[in-house]
Amino acid sequence: MQRRWFKGDTHLHTTNSDGVLHQYELIEACKKAGLDWIMITDHNYNTVEKSYSSDGLTVIQGQEITGYNGHVNVWGARVPFEMPYDLSDIEAYTKMTEASKKNGAMISVNHPFCSNCPFRMDLDAFDMDCVEVWNTIQHTDNNKCMKWWTDKLLEGKRLPAVGGSDFHRDYGPAKLLAVPTTITYAKSNSAEDIMDAIREGRCVVTNSPNSSMIYLDIEGAQLGDSIALGNGLTGKCTATKLHRGFVLRVYNNDKLIYEHRANAYEKTHTAHFGIKETGFVRAEIDYRLSRPVKKLLGFGERNFLAARGADVPETADEMFWAFTNPIWIV
Image 1 (cartoon, rainbow, N blue to C red):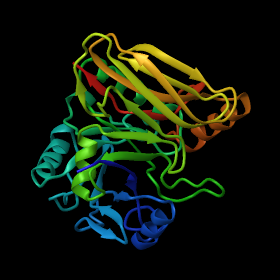
Image 2 (cartoon, rainbow, N blue to C red; image 1 turned 90 degrees about the vertical axis):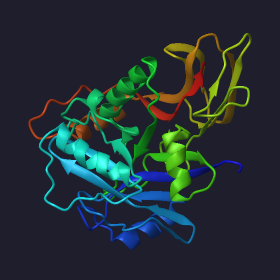
Image 3 (cartoon, rainbow, N blue to C red; image 1 turned 135 degrees about the vertical axis):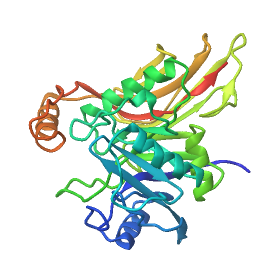
Image 4 (tube, rainbow, N blue to C red; image 1 turned 45 degrees about the vertical axis):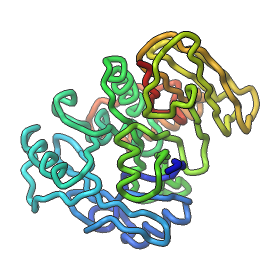
């Protein structure tokens, strides 16, 4: 079956936890946003009893296991425990996630480097199917998670990355639903095919449903695939909707092998490059913050994105706007 790109959001809340939209209001909003699939992940509550389709939008069962020590998404199967949960340590979390995986669930660690609610246990010791590298509106904590994830890739760990809006509500003019959007290269938008695509690392994370996209191809190999190095191996990367100042970067492991800065808006830009090392190739779009934007973001990080009294990282000068999972070079 030929694969297609399907837009979705991995991390959504309703009135069943601390969101402001009822389940069906949220579903209608996601349809209007142009999404193909969503995961409703209320805190410690199974809102969706079984994954289903609503007028072509796949609603995937989920829950965010939420405790002081960390937040973990469970997708695709019911969490087989009743409240109150024991979330006292990593063994308690693992007991819950392992039982959920036996029922067919996927496990994602959410916002592990969040200044407000981080993962406070040994992240390297926790068994996960993927990691939420980009959580909610772009901010400095996501850069920390991007660095951790790329370090894991350099160690040879095939750990897929996703993004999730962690949507609870909009704030005035700030529309936060599907910011960011995870776009999966899947056989269909059924719950099973979407989760398989995520497990295999076949996804791109971008700022919003109608934002920039990155298409990466290495002699027919797509995201999540493996291809032998060989002599003269070449790749192609096409990025769309590059605004002035956006930078497309392609990496072969930690080496920058292609860079392009848009001096004006570009509908598309295509890069061609050679590959010299085994490991992986990935791509991302980055942008530099202007001084006023950095000041505004810093205010938001201090006042809304960090726990009271917690240390807040210095606001980054540069953020990522979109990124791909890797193609593996063997």
